Image (cartoon, rainbow, N blue to C red; front, side, top):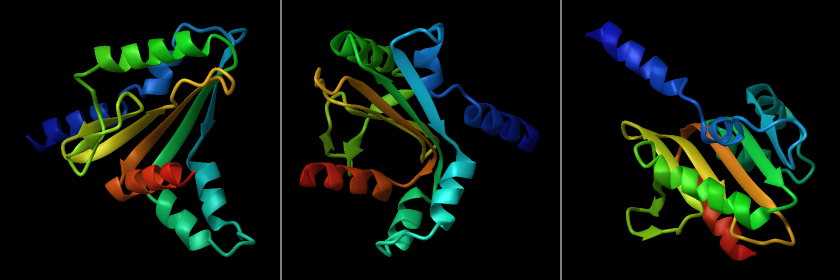
Length: 158
């Protein structure tokens, strides 16, 4: 039984993230680009000196993040956003809209993928803004709800 659980856990952790799924089939000449900030870069960010002295806050915020993938596109922003949200909706078996403390949803902007009670992935689809283009941020790892709440509060301050 333990071997079966280990196998299922390993499979779930290696499941394709949203960014990989969205980028699948797109060629390098596409107007859509994806960059990955991996564990090594995150570790480097956490260990570097921060002139403002906010290294502890950054370290705390990124502690459970394994990787961050950023998808961006400069043209066809509306169509790309519609495609991304549609893919998330069609993948309801894996993704669900994020609800702050089980109450308020954030529409079609914040989505999570859970493994058991643990949030393994957070997908942020930026609201439609054709002047800034299309943006998706895909966080993977062991994501603390406090991290998500921090992102939300930072976004509301702007």
